[in-house]
Image 1: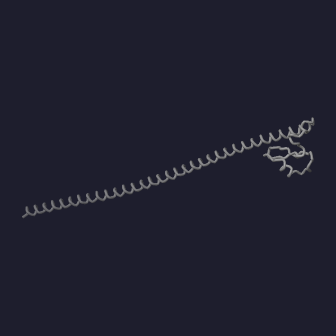
Image 2: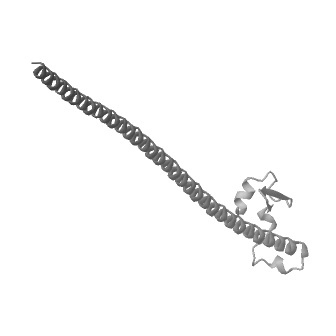
Image 3: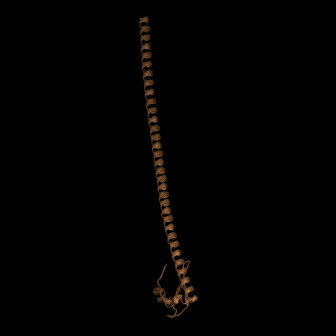
Amino acid sequence: IIMDTEQLNSNSPNQPGSEKEEKIQLGELNIEKVQDEEFPSPDSQQLFDGSGDLRSKLVETKLARKKAQEDRKLLQNRILLLRSEELKAKKKIEETKRKAQEITDAKIKIAEEQKLKEEHKVTKKAVVEMMAGEHKKMKETIKEGITSKQQKILAKKKQNFMERQAEKLE
């Protein structure tokens, strides 16, 4: 994060013209804030007057600015990385939700199929029982018919026998 010196000076509690330095901490970044009056313009003759103090401050400021720019780039890269990781996580969450829905749908389908099978089994059992009942009735009807015919034949034979016995007696 780079602030121009006017922004830094407007927020400064130091008096204008002061040679004090103030450190601003932004997260992990340490930026040194120095008043404008301390830096001469680059074409100023003071840079070459042999004053090591001014030159060292200028070098320190340039290094601090360069470090701040590097930190800014690192933070931007970190933000991009975190955003890409967030997108990956969101995709993974969506995929997990989709798979969970597929599993739920499959369970519902299996339950419906089992219900249909059970209903079919119950229906088939009822049909078999009904047919067995009808078969039993039909069998009894046939048996009664046979018995009835046998009794008629027997009765007819008795009658014929009685008639013959009556004829013989006559």
